[in-house]
Figure 1 (cartoon, rainbow, N blue to C red):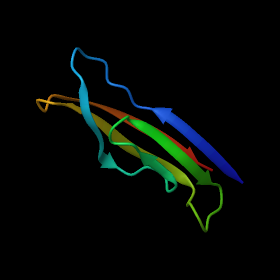
Figure 2: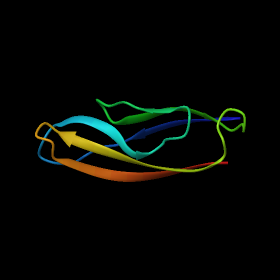
Figure 3: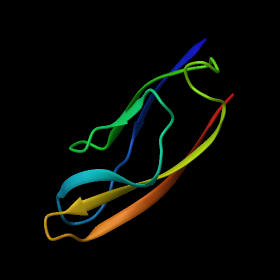
Length: 79
């Protein structure tokens, strides 16, 4: 079985976001972060040989052009 995920990390401020990055932890295998848009997309396969089950905790940080930043931690559980 597979689950397709589409999430959006969005920073709200008066400044344009220059880039997004994973700054702590790891996303489940099969997901990727678009550093320009903040979109988290991909397919997670529910199969122990492809993606181990368990909880993944990761932090996405958004940076503006003058290196101000805001971070948010996400938790995804693969069963």
